[in-house]
Image 1 (tube, rainbow, N blue to C red):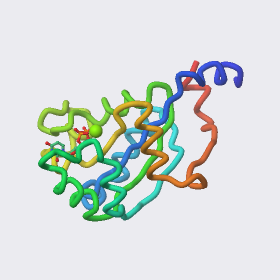
Image 2 (cartoon, rainbow, N blue to C red; image 1 turned 120 degrees about the vertical axis):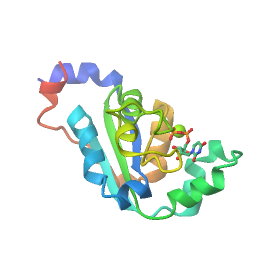
Image 3 (tube, rainbow, N blue to C red; image 1 turned 90 degrees about the horizontal axis):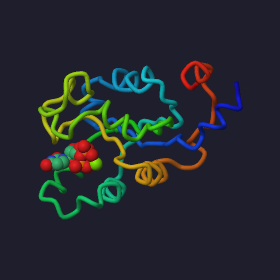
Image 4 (cartoon, rainbow, N blue to C red; image 1 turned 90 degrees about the vertical axis):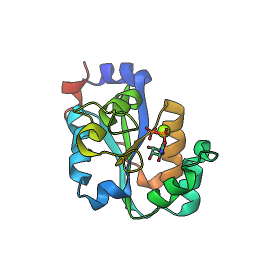
Length: 160
Ligand code: UDP
Ligand code: MG
């Protein structure tokens, strides 16, 4: 089984997914994690975490000049978040599809935001928007020893 897994390594990406404080408060942690699990992606990092203001500001630094920035930082730091690193072929764009549009009212049914949220300012989950940002954000939110390298037993049944 192993040679084909090595061959597919080039397409393997990583993405940072975060359940925002509203998702934690509303008891949606299990529901959200299982959508990525069922799709077939590999969880490589997971923690419940109270995000310091400085980290929230660094994470969202591209949005610094937006009028909603202060409210966004208050929102992300208002309670624990669930930080996750996920790995897989095409995981960055695929996770964004599973998450749905930024405004939950525009998000398709079947997506996390489409099914579970109504407002942009309470859209329950974050997902990296590019492979480079996936790497950047995982490095920002996790320390080295917090990530796991492992091979799920299902992998040969997911990847041909
Ligand atoms: N956001 C907001 N108001 C807006 C746009 C964005 O409160 O008008 C928040 C929202 O929580 C969103 C986050 O800022 O998820 C980051 O915005 P981005 O455009 O990167 O959306 P995402 O990548 O999360 O879909
Ligand atoms: Mg974004």
